[in-house]
Amino acid sequence: MLEPSHASYLKNLVGEGNFYDDSPHLSAYAYDATKERYLPDGVIFARDEHDISQILAYCNMHKIIVVPRGAGSGFTGGALSVRGGLILSLERMDQILEIDEKNLIARVQPGVINKHFQEVVEKRGLFYPPDPASQDQSTLGGNVSENAGGMRAAKYGITKDYVMALRAVLPNGDIIRAGKKTIKDVAGFNVAGILIASEGCLAVITEMTLKLLAKPKLRQSAMGVFNSIKEAMEAVYKSMASGVTPVAMEFLDNLTINAVEQRFNKGLPIGAGQF
Ligand SMILES: Cc1cc2nc3c(=O)[nH]c(=O)nc-3n(C[C@H](O)[C@H](O)[C@H](O)COP(=O)(O)OP(=O)(O)OC[C@H]3O[C@@H](n4cnc5c(N)ncnc54)[C@H](O)[C@@H]3O)c2cc1C
Image (cartoon, rainbow, N blue to C red; front, side, top):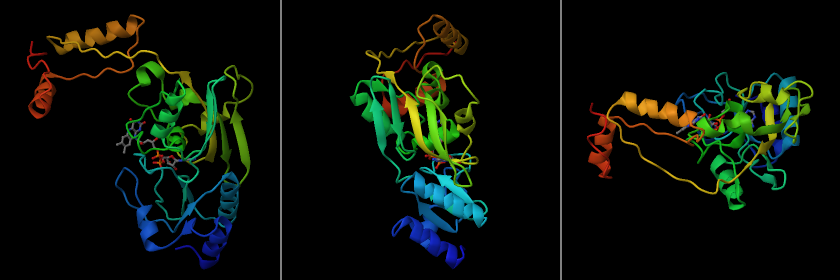
């Protein structure tokens, strides 16, 4: 439990409705996708970078553990308050700050949901490829902090390939900027690169400048039927080396094809892969 003086300071800092230490809130923020459960001592919702700076400076001074959290869909346990302390939720910092169509970049707050971001940029003819299977719920801040990848990774890469610059708050409350908006940014240490995949251990990411692509004009799906797994795998190597890299490839063996057919009756070739 947080000392009453700490609870009262933090509540005053972020205002009514942004700090909780009641049992329902503590329970609601005790989980991530690992299904492990560790009750925090408090849950605080940051409204902006300034809040985060103040929260971290105070907690650093008073040795209160702070665990940043996006949507809590991570499998690493990084959003769990294993030794108590404060869950710092970024979910209310969910604004897309800028979409720069000329320079193909966007500036976003960490709490933006991946899928929402994809939909918004696609309406403008742009494309953000990283698509973790948790895209309906996971936040872009969580994606950067875990360096999430998805089905489109083979062709387009993973989250780190789309992070151009970051703003973040260090544990002592200092605000830093890392990276640049330009592609040919070679000067200095790659500080943004260190923060990517750091699972909230080094800093709290407060803003991200992400690279966008032009939305592909055409999409085409194809199904190949093979007599054996070996033949199917050879087709994968050949198509990857042919210069026409597929966005995603899904492999179904005979057992899976038959299971899908029994359940959904899609007309899949049930004799495939038997030789
Ligand atoms: C059904 C399902 C499918 C999934 N599919 C994929 C997949 O295809 N590919 C993949 O890579 N992962 C996948 N994941 C894992 C998870 O969704 C990703 O790791 C995702 O990026 C986590 O985002 P989140 O917003 O839920 O972050 P959280 O789980 O809340 O946090 C994850 C970590 O990031 C830190 N963090 C969060 N926000 C910040 C911030 N602003 N600053 C600093 N640190 C921060 C937390 O402290 C924690 O260490 C999946 C999870 C589920 C449940």
